[in-house]
Length: 113
Image (cartoon, rainbow, N blue to C red; front, side, top):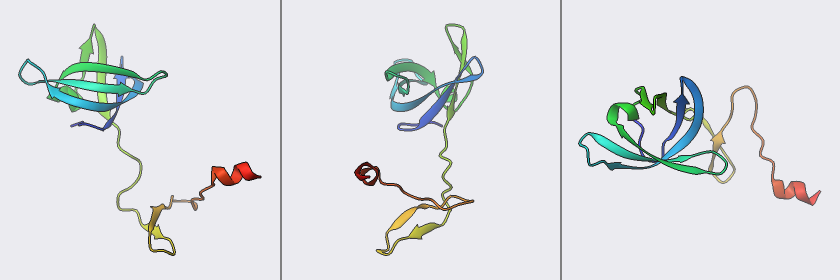
């Protein structure tokens, strides 16, 4: 089930529509329903508050004004078990991507050139 601070992809009419972050989930006056505040990643940013039940938070289809909608939890593509490199100070670096090495380029250094 999606929860606070999760990123979701909202499907509109069975097609990917927009991404949003769940900012708050509070009980609605109607038992079994929740007021879900979404920060919608559009330009400019928008805030929606939808009243949803637990099944809809888990990805069940629903409609608003006759438009089919569905929320899908976005899972990070970073693999939790991937090995991390350690730098000389013993601090962990980001996991290395398969098929190549990762290289960090400082924007500050680029400006100096």
